[in-house]
Image (cartoon, rainbow, N blue to C red; front, side, top):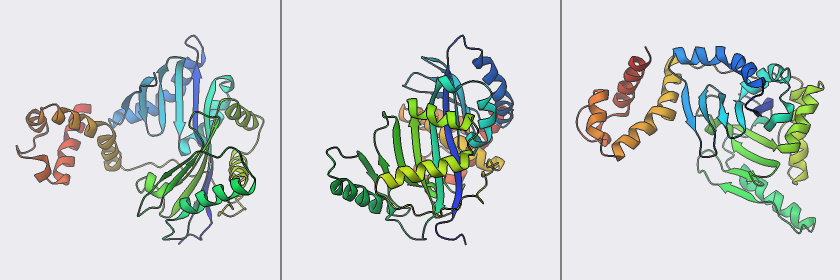
Length: 301
């Protein structure tokens, strides 16, 4: 069992860059993502994304590539962000960088579900002790089993911070009892951090130091070990075919089925999927998933 406080991973966790419509970078990143999306397409795992924020494109396994009102847009998240940084550094995207996340993930004491409440109390106490005239905006989400999550700041600001249960958020793709502290940097702050990486800073040490500094500024004592030299970049999680299909069903097929049923097309949905003609609530979850998986396979072969 991992030691409480041991660091599981640290480094870059999320990179978003945009390109002008006539920027040659679009062609470069098309080439960078082509192999990734080709592999995803063979398994039918590419999901179309359309956002009310003005961008649209396709995503799969931690990578989004599409267009928005400012031109081409690339988003790389999770362990792939750390692994792709060298490729990204070579293509001069710094002036167009719009967001960069840094994270530290560590093992909490098993059963400790009160971490967010503890951090929230520490932040408010520190602000009062310093005689602050402005207080951090805190977002608190209560979860009985996995522990609460806490966000600090505004999503529109240059810096937004989160504490959350990574084990719960990843749906079992990382070990249990794993907490994450995450800095979301945008605008000039993101560019400044990225410049340090371009100049050769070790992103693991950079992330660990940056996150620790932000946590201490808020009056919170970091609960992870200081020594991160032994931490290695976690490998990209190559999930089994069945797990990938289930994730694809959850993120793409399931919302589509729900909308069709809500619009009064339940019978047609059942006929397409080969399900019995009685209420969804009476059909076993496994039966529904197997029917959807078979239909998905037929649709992409």
